[in-house]
Amino acid sequence: MSLGFQRLTRDDVPRIDHLTMAPGQDAFTADPALRLASLAADQHAWAILWAGDAVGFLVIDQGFAATHDFARPGEPGLRSVLIDAARQGEGIGKAAMAGLRGLMAATYPEAESLVLTVNERNPAARAVYLNAGFADTGALWLGGRSGPQHILRLELRTGV
Image (cartoon, rainbow, N blue to C red; front, top):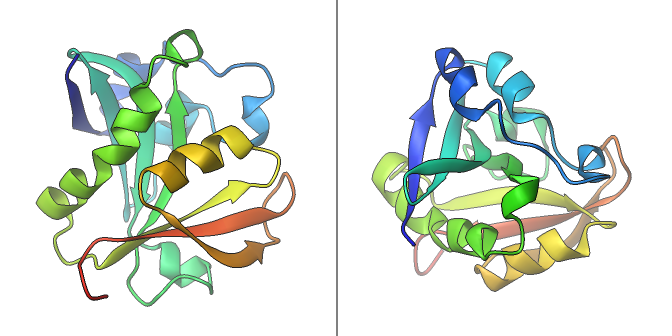
């Protein structure tokens, strides 16, 4: 199957309002339709496409460093990642995270790295991020609504 990403606007809620969370995932991510409807100006929503169908969602937050002191100056954050509950386990999340480097290079070429937080109680997501090249900084962020979160970073440029 083929992976793709498509930038979304608030008008695209109908395109992703079918995406659902598996039980308990609401502790770790936001409802995609609600998140899309409430985007800040410096946040960009993306549909994760699989064979042309919207099967997931993520947000690149260009203002992340302004609200998270562990982020490097100007470093974007990866937020609100979700693969539709009915499509989990098919390798789509792994493919999407592996495809992030291409998305970042094409759309955010000035970014030297990308940072995210993942809840300690979400080891499956953490493993996907680590397998995609994110490195655990060894620090925890304690500001999450569902408990401590690992801080992970993906270096986008060699030598950084």
